[in-house]
Length: 378
Image (cartoon, rainbow, N blue to C red; front, side):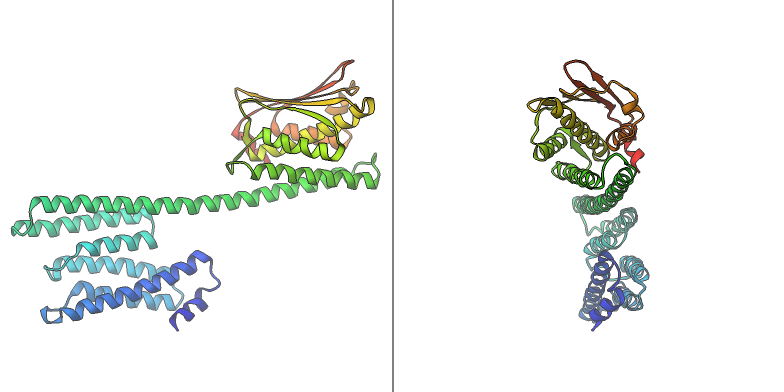
């Protein structure tokens, strides 16, 4: 009955809140039952003040829990339990074992509060432990070895418990950051698609069918980029060699072109956000090379070379095409492809140029590896 009511009250809350409410309710029940049993077992020796306060705190916590006051329920059980421990030390049965109660309270604070508060409570309970042991030692009931062993084990327990919870909390925060990162990437991709649509809409050179075909190819290219990204070993950077492999493979499938890929020997790690504009430039350059070199010689080979050293990237695309003699063709672009290259080069804060001669054409892209670039895409 009570679980059904908790489900009705907290059913629409987030997963962690629902679980916290269930855990708190079970904890309150266990504390109440154990405290009542402890009081009844030794009723002839007097009232066990500490356990009595424990039982009352559990009932108060359950009351707050049932009226949708989760925070009040949590802090009532925490602070009243700490009060119960304090009363038990000074006014409870002196023959009782309060040390396990200290560990229990520390675990309660770890689960339902934060690490800073738990450290403060650990220090406070450590002081209570020292007072209790000093009293026993003064009466000759404890040896110094037992006192030091207990204190050292208590410190070890608190340290390990806090570190464990900190690690678990860090994993939770890392997942939250990763989820936000995914939303950010989705937003960026939607903006890129919107930009594609605008560029194709303003392109008066291509026919409608050609625009749709080019638009679909660029969307497919974007999916290939993310395929390479999700195959990477980390969630924050990708090896550009892998990205190039995906794009070259896509161009080969689309056009059957002969493309030689020369990879960076030492790898080329780059932020995932920055790798997207880089890959888009590569795709446009390869499309341009396939188009123009193919007109001149069907058997011509396209070479893609990536170099990375001293945090500096250099991409070279060589083909047998006629090249671009007029610099304004790519510096002041009018076509969709060169417009994209210009925009993405600016996002990389890099430099781009065409070198042409009688042998063929060479496109060169250079940029640096700086974390600052990632903020440009936000």
